[in-house]
Length: 273
Image 1 (cartoon, rainbow, N blue to C red):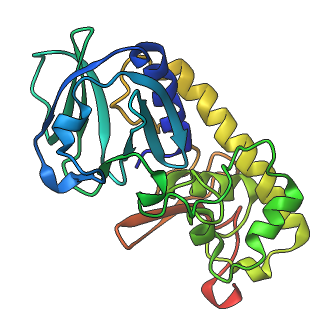
Image 2 (tube, rainbow, N blue to C red):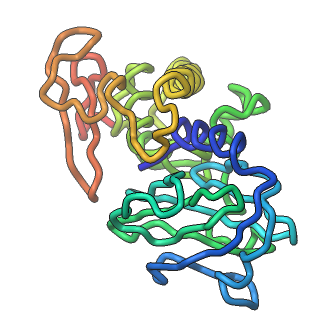
């Protein structure tokens, strides 16, 4: 699942290559993924528009278009963007492709068909877009502001971190990394966190995401369709030794997601939440 660090790197890559290009044509291969929130056919509406900007909001990529439209990509679990020469190798799970004026294609693949590609001139029409909280790395999100974002929440801290209404951009993988860095049990109730733990959580959130962006900036290159996660400390590494204490990393699977954590560094039990 692409999260804030992944999408930030993809955004930077596409900003350098797409701005000023014209969409000469568009093809929808999997209509279930596309939502044209305008009074016109998706392909016809895109044709002839210039890409004037590429931005990110939470776990969404936004392509700003010359007629005031936005093409919003929410990759969800398995969506990926591919920047390829037109007529290149076939892409598995290709859902949408934009033919660009420089002879390249921008394709969106989604083998599990969970993501969405929206075309709109009003971002408020994109589901859950307007309800997003502040960006997890927003300089204006202070520790005090972060505490206020957590205060009304009653769930487990991992679920709150991945709730885009609390803070935007964090998904399953980086929530695990943040909680490991902060030494907090993923299933602790937010209401049981101390002020010191919230401060550790805030600092871990900022440092983990910033460091990940720096790492991905060095390693992703032009392969924006690949998900680079091997550098993570605990996520997806169940059964391996903890890089901090050497204990075995635990892994719990639920609701099509895994939670990876170290029981020694992040002690807790469900009845002690």
